[in-house]
Amino acid sequence: MTIVFVTADKIEPTGRLIDARFDMANVELGKALYEEGHVEGAVFWDLNTDLSDLTKGEGRHPLPDKEKLQALFEKHGLHLDDAIYVYDQGASPYATRAWWILNYAGFKHAYVVNGGFQALKDVGLPITTEVPTFPKTNLQLQWNDEILLKRQDIVNIVEGKTKATLLDARSAARYNGEYEPFDKLAGHIPTAQNYDWEQLREGSNLVITSSLLDKVSKDEDIVVYCGSGVTATPIYTVLKEAGYKNVQIYMAGYSDWVNHHPVATSN
Image 1: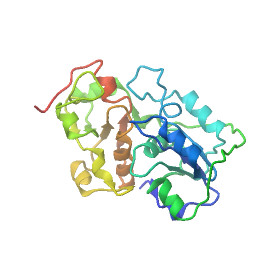
Image 2: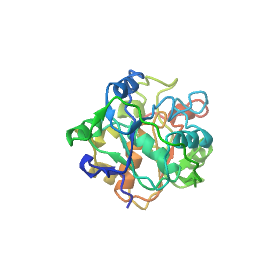
Image 3: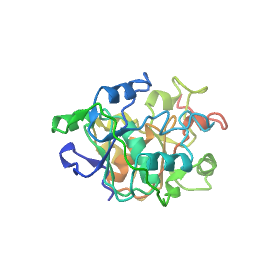
């Protein structure tokens, strides 16, 4: 079983901290919150500028190339054996996106802090406005390519050439095709099932739910997607925490699929 989530009181004092706070409705908010105050020693990773490459055409939050991600890790002085703690505002998909990227790059001791920034503050960790700097590192990464699927992989699943369960992490209304606030067509990838990631929220924590475990079994190959590879990551991480081994992500998501292939609706 992969340990993904930790409580704020379990932070190792020698661990590294990453502040991933963000707000889809106000993309400047995360950086502003970091500048107002963050846990001492935490560096800031922005969803749009660090954890996505908006110049690419693979959905709305395209995954940066490996070279760009490695440069991010090295710039902030990360080592492969570091204990790395990622936090956001709690019960959000931004720390889990950062965790997934670290896991993809082969960091084996990365964790999401359940409860987010407030939980760390509540246990007495010092809060500062000082931006830390670390000596640059030179990493030899071993990427976990098998956890990332591309559009053609999804085509193979839809056409029955590959056996796997597609799990759509968006709201039921978007999945059903009732409305679509971002992409040109409403609906979902054909054959996909639906599980709204927000069902995993309990206060400021992300938790394992019986409804998710009932939805998919451990002997299935599961591919999670959402609109653009952000809100799929809470489902991915919770399934890993629950001991599911065969979980992958279509990171480009529905916002990539809808530009190339037909969609289904439940209407």
